[in-house]
Figure: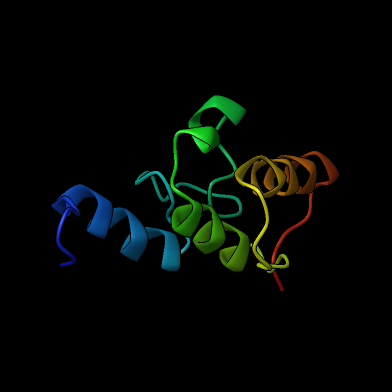
Amino acid sequence: MLPGRSADQAGWRARAADGEAGGSGAGGAAGAHLSGEELRARTIPELVDLLRARGLPTTRGKKEELVQRLLCSRARGARPG
């Protein structure tokens, strides 16, 4: 684990990589149930993990751009693969 990272953050990254962002693991694309407010509370690396899990571009951008990319993909019903 990286210094300054809690076990919960490390676990979240592992769950996101498995498509279980947020820990519920129930249905849909990774993080599909997260609200805009919940997405904004995540770190940029966590948002990139969600984008990757959904098969969306993971190029770096401002945090709000990453959040909007996730929210727009959910609105369009985009799913990975």
